[in-house]
Length: 299
Image (cartoon, rainbow, N blue to C red; front, side, top):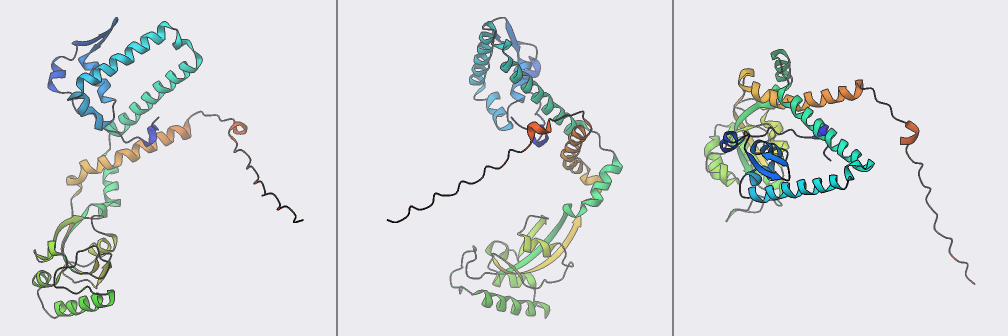
């Protein structure tokens, strides 16, 4: 059973046009019980997201047969009065409660209105999360790097790689062109061919050591050597900016909704009239370890 508080709510896609056109059409009859196209669509919506496309497409008939088997078995269970058993009633009620809990979570996380002051406050507190940088780099690999060693190049030790990148940095500070040097010296063949250009990236896209420098280094400056598992880097940030509140508002609200749903559910628990028998739920006393038997005395 999925805990509602931990459920990642997924908004169901709209039904196919064929379903909308035949929403009330009866497509399955099991005894006297009717299932319309719309009801079948709602059943499919309750499936995990990765299963919905198959149930609407290549497995449509197979899924219908599964529904029929469940209905037939449920009807037989009722004829045998199994639904009157206490254990079954408890299970049915729990499953109903779970369905309602999940429906509430989705309702809160998709339909809750977020006013502008609340969204703007979140934006100001998390503005850095949406910052983007455009940068170039030069990489000098060292022994153990996952970057393949290019033909004709020496497999440098860490000290040798550090010494080489320090020498390159000195040349850059003296006026050498960063892009031209990246093309001839960088061991990152992909970006090196483009003058070390990494394009635009957001926070968390690069390895942590690189990411940390890329978002604090002043634009236009050349970093000190930065060590990662790939080797040593020189980084030059060419641009850094962040989208405006208005541009980000839909994304902000999407990010905020799970936290709002969790807080709402936490408040329900905090303010709900709940009583637990603490003696019943008390932790069981630890079972003392049984010491190993003493070795037998030698005769």
